Length: 223
Image: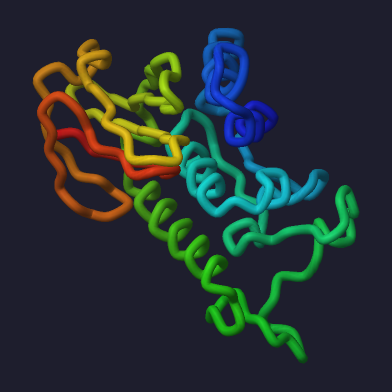
């Protein structure tokens, strides 16, 4: 899944690349006794930092972390990922495992207080805090079933559900605003026209399509 996620974020969309690789990886879950018990991760101590792997794209960072927080499995987030750690030398384990800034004598940057972090690092950190603090209380993510739909037009959509309680996850790679028609997902959300977008905390509604902002995730607790 880690390899598929990197490819999904970086490759152009077609029937063999982009989101399709991630869709295909998740489609193999039938091979596991319980895919919910798998550990998933964007990076770890033995590979290049996630931010380096996705070519220093904050938009791709947010898409990737949204996936990590909402798909099946147990997410493992390596320290520093939330402030865009980037190993300066490829495959150099010294840089991959560098000290977290803050709390050490002489540190000019403090990842705990935010002092010295760049605007992009602060953005990533705040996004990650919001995302995973919400996840703590989400029964649908912790215990819900997963159903996903084949990626189309640069958008990957899946749902987590327990009975009538449903969560919709939309991962949009398009560089321009996009209207996602919802009739394709009638199997799960027929008759549902509103919900709460958890990243913004705002209530949203729609009729035939959901308006998506460019290169961004949307996580909706459906009403």
